[in-house]
Image 1 (cartoon, one colour):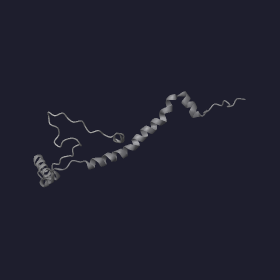
Image 2 (tube, helix red, strand yellow; image 1 turned 180 degrees about the vertical axis):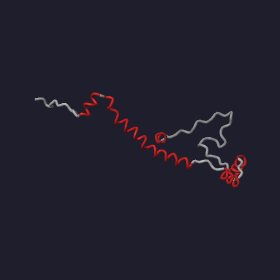
Image 3 (cartoon, helix red, strand yellow; image 1 turned 135 degrees about the vertical axis):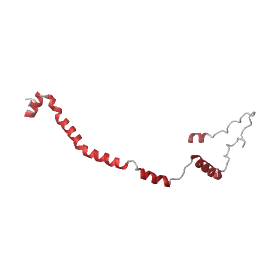
Length: 126
């Protein structure tokens, strides 16, 4: 006696019909997809309607009301205001030079001095 007896599966009438007409196999999937598309149409339409209400053009009266209260803006004037304010707060400060380097750098004709040696334990830490 074999370990698994040979019994044919799916002898239902639906299986026999699909066996004869394999094109019918995808029909339920297509029906679900098309039905869902029509079902979702109402939800997507309300979404787009709400979005269009938020982004509508102003009427001419609303535009005129905004123009009356608008402040004149000039980019050059704002630039000069900002640059004047930043110059008042700005203070030149020299940075510290590395040890062994003169404060004002090296003269053009003078060869640069070699940089100071770095201890080996510092090289490993970096």
